[in-house]
Amino acid sequence: MIRIGIIGCGHWGMNHVRIFYFCEGAKVQICCDKDHARLKALHNTYQGLITTTDYNRVIKDKTIDLVVIATPTATHYELVRAALLNGKHVLCEKPLAIKTKETKELVELAKKNNKILMVGFVFLYNKGIIALRDYIKKKTLGKVYYLHFTRTNLGPIRDDVDVIYDLASHDISIASFLLGKWPKKVSTNAGYFLRKKISDTAFITLYYPDNVLVNIHVSWLDPRKVRRITCVGDKKMAVWDDLDTAEPIRIFNKGVLKEPYYADYGEFHLLPREGEVISPLVKLEEPLKKQNSYFLNCVTQNKRPFTDAVFAHNVSKVLEAIQSSIKKKGQIRIIDK
Ligand SMILES: NC(=O)c1ccc[n+]([C@@H]2O[C@H](COP(=O)([O-])OP(=O)(O)OC[C@H]3O[C@@H](n4cnc5c(N)ncnc54)[C@H](O)[C@@H]3O)[C@@H](O)[C@H]2O)c1
Image 1 (cartoon, helix red, strand yellow):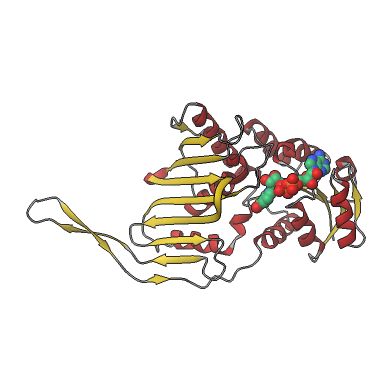
Image 2 (image 1 turned 90 degrees about the horizontal axis):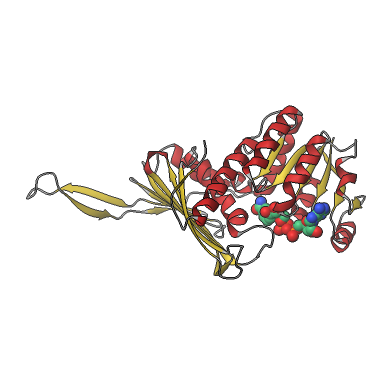
């Protein structure tokens, strides 16, 4: 039986409590939040939970094997560090920390203490995203030209980090998972429409190897909730729509034909090619449930998760380069190796 402590039981942390509470082989032993009302709500829903407002009670408890951290991003570094130093395995929400200096330190600390540090890039456990990755890997779409991501909504607006750390961290993780590579360069323009120092809207371009372009549009200031990826290849095109639970993926057998232009040797006619649209069966499963049971498995079998601290550190390097590009008014910045 793995004994779990959960720090941060707000909007997202409550989902961790629910999933681990009903998970075989795991016991949620103690939950921590600064907010008494949230702890009271937990007491009313789940029997036998110990609750506290002091996170030290969780990380210093010798009976706890692993700690889940679902507090605001600005607090992650301090809490993850303390949990690792106290000999806990850690599942931390995305992004792991704000600075790459911090994520690097956490990578090393987890390694030194022989503990598993996994980060909650939950979309990589989404069946639709996994299916899209498989189509790309099997070259069903041909050579990928570009990916376009939209992740917008009206709020929720955060105070501790900007829209890029909050939302684009997901898309960077997904793009790199789909392509099996990390970007080399980045350029970004951001909007500070609501506040002077925290961006609420951003248009990010990532330059991947093999000339693959990735564009990410994230916003807290948009009339519609959209979670969509368009993937354009030289043979076919695909669209993933997280909000379309019946048909999350559609494959468009469309493209552009190049026909020789005889009047002018070496030139081509570009002819749009129309074809059928297929929506393959994707049996959806709650991604967080899949992620958390995978984490438990990694802990019990002492296996390194693929969304580990090294993966999270790579995401942070991209996030840091994005901030540097914004400061230089959208200039292309090279991402550290
Ligand atoms: N993976 C996902 O899809 C996903 C979705 C939403 C949020 N998140 C991440 O989860 C984290 C939390 O987001 P949220 O939406 O639940 O925020 P939230 O504000 O609803 O909840 C955060 C909770 O942490 C508590 N808290 C803050 N500091 C604390 C401390 N030092 N000790 C104990 N409790 C403390 C707050 O009282 C609050 O209840 C963020 O890092 C966010 O990026 C991930």
